[in-house]
Amino acid sequence: MKKIISVLLAMTMLLCTACGSVTGREEDVVNIYTGITGIEKDETMMTVGEIEIPASLFFYWVNAIASDAERIYQQYSIYYPQYASMLNADGTLNWNVNYSQTMTMGDVIEIQAMEKLAYLVIAESMAETNGIELSEENRAEINETIEKNLDDYAANLIEQDEANAQLSREEIESKYFYNLGIDREQVERLMAITYLNNAIIELMMTEGSSLYVEDEAYNDLAFYADHILIATVNLSTGLALPTEEVEKKTALAEEILLALQESDDMETLFANLADLHSEDTGRAAYPTGYIFGEGEMVPEFENAVKELEVGELSGLVKSTYGYHIILRRDLMKGLEENPEEKVALTETYLTTLINTIIANSNVSTSEKLGEIDLSEVYSTYMELSGQREAAKSSAKPEISDK
Image (cartoon, rainbow, N blue to C red; front, side, top):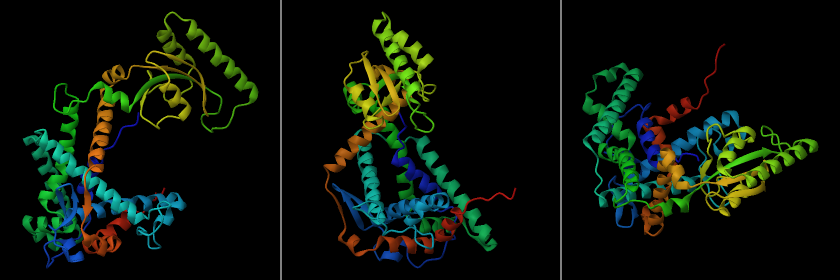
């Protein structure tokens, strides 16, 4: 089962890199987004239920997502020309390109920003309700990260202009947070959510806690099954094997199935035969099978697992890969044996829970948002903060002279 990467981790990563190459400027306004939009930084731009999200945080997150998308498509377009359509002629992100049949790139960026901010505030509320707070160690780590970012920023300023060596720490910090668009308190808030998220997950896995997740909930989210794959295609190319070889493979699959059906110790024999005959390239990493959610396996495999009871053996299941002989396993036992899988599945449960809360909440945005061109906000921000040149430089591939 693939690990689920929390959007909260992405928040922290962007905070750590957002101002790595900016120049810093003296400004007449307190907040860069106020200067661009005319909207005060603390004015409510989005509301989730009764929780208000200020304009500075909203614009920061829209721009962080856009910046990340621009960087990714710049890199992809170097090697995969089809991605060039996501960019303008000058290599900047094309906000008007159709991302899907119903949404432009700009629509997707705005929606993703709103989803992540809604997740943020609901997770914060859940932590508060359940008495979860940052530890002193957490706070120290957050402060250490911020100070390291400020050190890197100061070094970058000096590299660009030696005169910046005369800047005080207070002046460096002022420039840094001005260019970031959010203040230190908001940066701490975004970094804190990763710790709170982890604490929520730990509480969900602690029996007797206020957020404990019962076994039934896990069984609603995932399946656990092992299989013996007898491939009827070349697993490297996907091309069908010669007819004669397929016939031999079919006979082998039928022979294995019969042996399992007649065995007095089917599970032990299954493990031995799987090690001996299964052509699944993932078996070395997953020797007892896969823990997976809806849509993560080919439909034939997933549908067959759903029809089996724990400990039950399937017949021959044909898919585009070949023949599967499937043994459904006990999910909770699998999670006990693979704690990292339980953490990942608990995170999936938490994400589902929070998304359900969001769906049942009144999420709205300020009328002023409809009067603003977010692509212009982004473009102006990138130019004013000095990140446009940094983004262009990072998009260039390294070319060896060897």
